[in-house]
Structures are given as structure tokens and as C-alpha cells.
Image 1 (cartoon, rainbow, N blue to C red):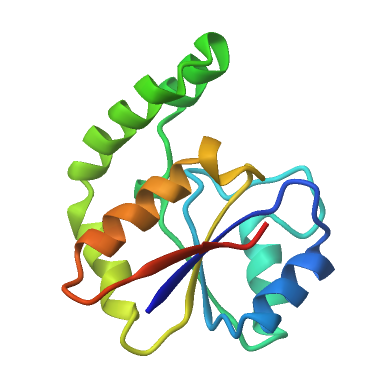
Image 2 (image 1 turned 135 degrees about the vertical axis):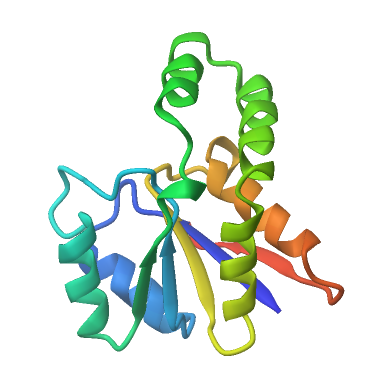
Length: 145
């Protein structure tokens, strides 16, 4: 099994859709706390519309987003090790949401979406890692950059 992740920074909506189709993604899981973007096509409802036109499902899970205080702190201080430690603690309280995503693996090809281009600086990587821990089977993480 593979869990895909994707940051849309620097991409157009058409580039995003092409990547998803090339990798046969059937469900995009939006892990932004707020599914809003100044970038055309990437706000929740608009994104959902574009995805539906390609027969790709959309699921926004606000609870898997990084809380604003954590995001502000990492922007201020630049300490990503601390950010990821705090985010993992936050995610521990969201195990029911992780389980919801994990259950979809049996019939969906899933991609986690956030803004940050570099997966090393994005919480979606931690979400993918935690999802892989929920399974007894091997799950690989593939970042679509």
C-alpha cells in the first residue's frame, strides 16, 4: 500500500489534477486546518469541484491540520523539531480521524494534501507516518512534489 502526499505550493490546479490522475488517486484528503487559499482552485469547494470533474473524491479533515498557534510559533522560531513534537502530541488526540482515513485504504488510493511544497517541513508527512503505524501491512509514503 502507498499513501501519497502532495503540497500544492508552486502548482496550478491543472498540474495538481494531472499528478493525481497520473498516480490514480481516487481520494484527496485535505489536511489543512482551513481549506482556504488565495491561489485559484485550491479553496475547499472550488477544489472539490475540480476533483469531481476528474472523478476524484475530496475529504477535508480539519482536525488533522496544524493548529494556528503551532504554525505561528514555527514561523517565528523556525524550530521544526519542536513543531513536529508538538504536532505529534496534537495528532495523538485525533486518533479517531486517523482511523477514519485508514479505513478508506481498503477501497481508495489516497493522497494527503497541504500547501507546503517540501514534505520535510509539512505536517502531512507526520500524518502519513502515523497512518502507516496503524497498519500491520507495509505502507510506503510517496511524496508527489
